[in-house]
Image (cartoon, rainbow, N blue to C red; front, side):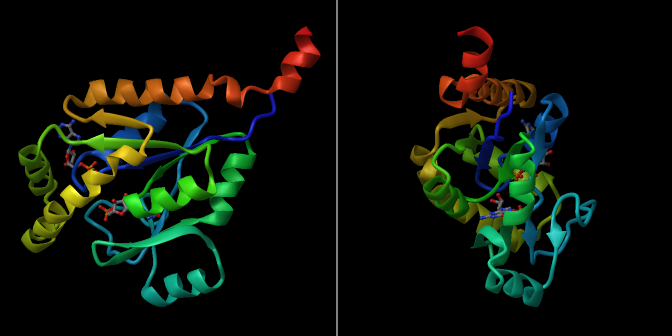
Length: 202
Ligand code: ADP
Ligand code: 5GP
């Protein structure tokens, strides 16, 4: 079948586990690629340029905005983050599905522009566990962690605009749920190649 890829958009308050889930999901789902965003944030320990993000400075990011190179971009937690139009398009036109780990502002924008995108919201089991995970990650200062926790409530309020909600309590369970969403979305009649069915069976 000659299909165009599906855009899966994942959002969650910082620390809920979406990055962990995204990397595990692409390991167990074929034909699914992670979108590598551009950001002006500094790399955390262990993060690799071109793998986790394309790390750029403000000037480069602003020039990319002017050149209309972003499908969407947003300021999140004091830094700029954006999704490349060209790279997303290359993946989707190859018939591969793409997984975007983006914030609630970016998700809204993409849903408006790409109505058949699939929006998934990840929740932590509780606010206490969210805080524990942020602290346990040991990658952000106390001030940054406090900012992220403060913002979590506003982000969680957006869950109603999503198609699916997954609680990331036991990682393996959340992962199975996420994979189930991908499989179910791929099987939707609305995404079927009707021409292929007609030519082969009718
Ligand atoms: P996000 O991308 O949403 O900010 P991360 O994927 O970086 O979150 O996860 C935050 C921290 O929580 C990491 O240290 C990660 O290993 C841990 N974590 C993620 N999911 C779980 C889970 N289900 N149970 C326990 N710890 C988890
Ligand atoms: P972090 O700094 O923890 O990696 O990411 C902070 C937030 O930025 C997360 O909510 C993440 O989903 C979001 N984010 C990452 N890349 C993009 C992007 O390309 N666009 C938007 N709008 N948000 C992004």
